[in-house]
Length: 146
Image 1 (cartoon, rainbow, N blue to C red):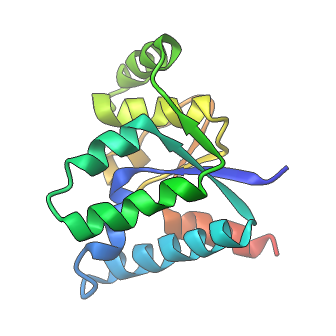
Image 2: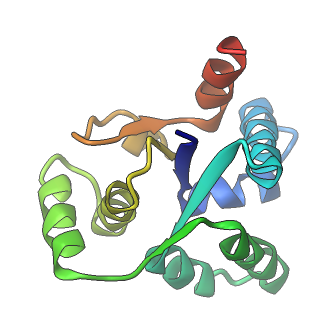
């Protein structure tokens, strides 16, 4: 079975952050590596209505367009439904903000193995049904398995 991942909005935006800040650069390179693996067919990408929603709020049109193109590479696109809302409410009870909880609920609905984010607040949490990982740690793991 192919590994399926969900990248949240901050993960998709990481390559646009200040590359002179070493953690930003390292996370951006890891995220770009994940995207190359998606293009090569080694990893599946999940998409959701929440990515569409948050990306539409991006004030930078070039970034918005670059991120939106990844929707065409997704093997699954999750739309809103009651079960996702219920799951997000439950996830939110552990201190995760509502939009982030909706992203995670969408990733679980898409049967993703990993939820990739660069948001340190999310990475400090644990959610049943999915692993929350920084792209740098994820790439380290998949490369170690080769």
